[in-house]
Amino acid sequence: MMYKRIVIFIAAALMPLLASAQAQIDTKKMKIEDFTEKTTKVVLTGNLFFDQVFKDEIQNRWRISPFEFCSMAEFEKIKTDDSYYFLMMVKEQFRKESEPGLAVLSVMKGGEAASRGLNRMLDVVTVPLMSAENPSGREFVLLPALIDILQEHILLSMERDIAAYSGLSNYTMNLSRSEGMKIVFAEDDLSDAITEKVRKVYFRNGIEVMDTDSADELMMSHTPETLVSFTVYPSDWKKGSYCYKMLIDAATHELYYYRRHKLSTKFGPGFLLEDINRIATR
Image (tube, rainbow, N blue to C red; front, top):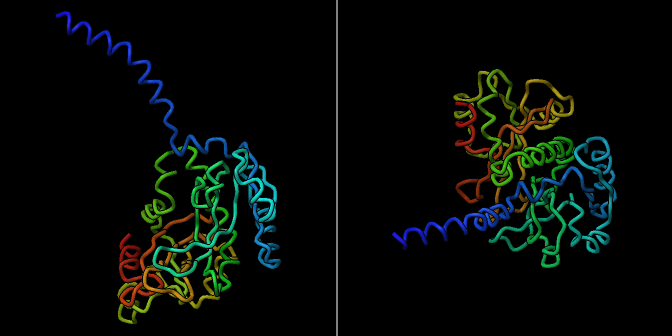
């Protein structure tokens, strides 16, 4: 009986300590809860043409935090300062690639970890932008939407840990809300597996293919109730590179589909049959 009382006493004594230790576990949601209060440093690339477009779009669209533009040199000086967040274009290299194949837009939090490299910084959200070596030009058409997608995800991540940890892939669940909307695939976004036979089966009831310029026009015109495709993959892809596939609402810039697949001789770039089937049977 005495032993039982001792155990209960020790357990009661430890409970406040355990509760305190548990409370100190910082989730990603907690780590970025100050995002809207701190300054986001938008890091320019040094490419005058891209930077001008980038600056214009940020000035027109960024709404969730104070922001300032800075050079790459300034970023290197202040990247360890946790009073800043950083929005920048980063070249991404996958494990089997000999050099970076993609350029992505990343939002990261400053901090001491930055001294050990970009990959050590807290990644708030990342969205693929373009091929690192030979961009198609579509990145300029989709840039406003991608900036809005970044912001929407940051705000959602501040509310829910599941959003913070799952990243953009969770948005594919939005497909269930796309009934009655038109879905337009740019011709250049379809893989070789999407043959005429496949098109006759799936491309009906509001799903269609357009030449890429026409699809981009829908995006630039903010066409309501219309989802437009966008793919990003290395222009000189190798086995082990990845292709990212998206469907974006042309009017609201909401993300309805986000998936990627590893590129190979069997699965080339673009939407695969698996994607088309998933989308058509939403």
